[in-house]
Length: 508
Ligand SMILES: [Zn+2]
Image 1 (cartoon, rainbow, N blue to C red):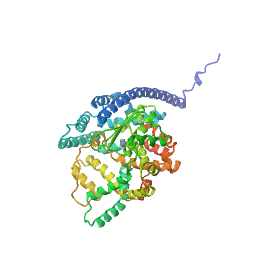
Image 2 (image 1 turned 30 degrees about the horizontal axis):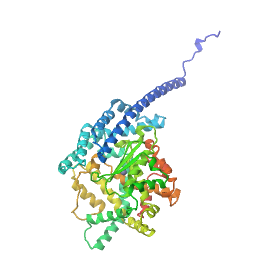
Image 3 (image 1 turned 180 degrees about the horizontal axis):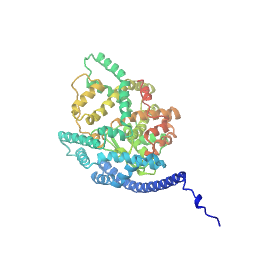
Image 4 (image 1 turned 60 degrees about the vertical axis):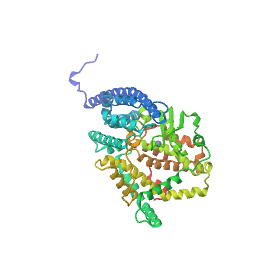
């Protein structure tokens, strides 16, 4: 028997105490974490189910294959996204997400945070009701001759409501909220716009002066500017190939080692609402992709939509929130999604592809590139003016849309006359995809960067290299687990490279 020695018994050391407390907290933290994970697993199954229903409804809306019930799935989204337990879990975990060691769970928390934030605006009861009403007014029907004034008034109300909601959530306005939530960041984006404006201004001015001298006009007008854009697009679009579009999509994919017939994809052609060239929808990621193209679209539009399909069909992340369904703005990085679509479209602008499928010769292709280089500053500035005019509707609610368009035309297109043909607000993008238009310019830069990488890695004949398809898959597989900047770095070695883009068009 050992003698107990009360007098020598020391109190627990501070060190041991701290260690025990932290073990206690760590295990209670782990328990909480497991609870969170279980909860998210359950909620994401529901989230995916509703996303599939809404995707199906939008497919019917665009394709006209069946009656489109957009309202029922949106109501289900509403219930799910305003769920108190979900919101309180994310509100608790988002600020301390750096403590979550499991990086997949950490990313789910981040993406849920963004999704819930944008849902607080788009799924606000009043906003949702108005948006549904406006979408209904835009549906393509035989007896659709809606009053434009009525539409504009309602559209302006929607803009006001989005701003008001964003302010309630602590943002200056809806533009700030949207850009802090779409993967771009408001500051990054304003720098991006300023840079492109600055870098293209001199060459654009030179172009304008040259036109004025040649045409002997004293004022540069909107029609002159539109001619530039027309020249750019005419030379950027492949001339009518000999094969029909769907066969050419299949063949272009086969050339890079992707078998279209094995993909759960369906492409159809049908008249779409004004302003929409094509609409590709991932109904169920990664199992069901469909796209509808409006009549008379060229192969690059078909390949663009197919690119949305490749992006979704090769996604193999095991968490619905990281699959990046497009129905809630904060759930994905739309600039990158459009970039994936344009990367696919980019094959139809590839020299070797053009030589094989169109009547263009080396000489023609060279000439087309020179014309594009000449008009690229106009093309870039046209994009700037296009999205800035929508942004300004939110930033300067006191200004009329006509006023904004006139100012923007002067600033970016250097229009010198006061006579400017303006557009009305009747545009489905403004209703369903607010502040989305910049994604098309960023997409062009993403595609340019990826095609440059493909050329470096696989040589000038890369559009006919069977390994290219699997190389591209690295951009798709991880879904939203990686930020879009990380995905660019992984695939091209760098983040979005605006300078290389400007150099490509000989602007810099
Ligand atoms: Zn697209």
